[in-house]
Length: 376
Picture 1 (cartoon, rainbow, N blue to C red):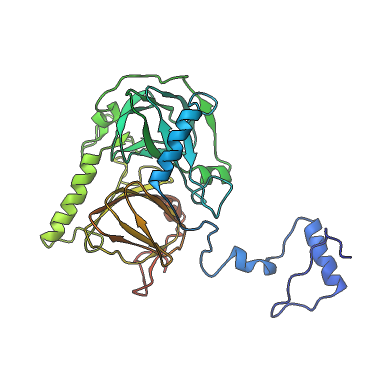
Picture 2 (cartoon, rainbow, N blue to C red):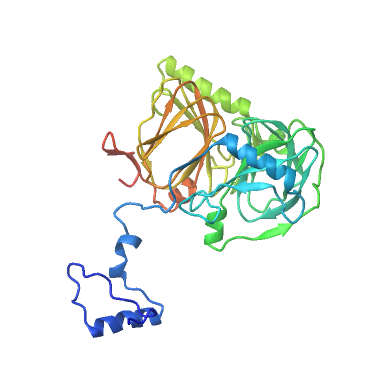
């Protein structure tokens, strides 16, 4: 009988030695000394192209809202649970609640007149609202109204809590770099106020009053900041920017990323870069009937349908999408979009990490070409 504690020699590959007692002992000694020979794992460690454990997946918003509402009836939101947030678990990464190896996404539910207590953590976070209003998120003492289409920022180590000032519940999605911070052993966490430090309900936050004026930087603060100082990117400005891109396209000007496809990146006004050091946030609008080019990208992304209907094609498999639906695109998975009507989608990705480390690569398989500037 073979000792189950011994590591068997791997299958013979071209250029490898024939089995022998000495070779078996060598592999047993590898295991005993917590080592592993490269020649048995090259295909796992250095594949010809990315082989993500995460899989393409679609979560239906109607089902997410249903389970979040039921959680609201059964699970308290106060200290202990901290948040009534339900992480979206990629089947390829289960049981850990990771949407991708670098990104965390959850639906959060806050009931009428509830308060989620304040805390802070090293991880960077944002919130995106696909429907509803009446909740204020308080970030470092600054109350920020949350409304449909708004992107709300909570950079790392900022105290934050939420309070619902209405008789109706509200749901939104949270995006964080939890998997990246956790697996790199970067995370810290600290409790804050049992409620929120300011229960005011202003229409516009102090950070917006200071920073949210296009092309204008306050002279009192000209230092580059790692994360955006703007607490909220409001829907009306996003909508206008996308509409103008398509209008300029109609007038014959080069304003869209591809025909019928307008897109914007939310930016940090202090340096023109991404809103968070580890997360890129974008918004895309497709005209009725538009089909995007199929592409493969290094790095992962998560999308939510804001309005309209259409489909996403992931590695050749098409899935119908409607308002609120969420899908994940793992690294190097081929994806494209098709719009049945005007199709608005919010996207976030780990592109800042990928680009800072110079691993970026985008390939268009139908055209057989790489995006200029990528590592093709």
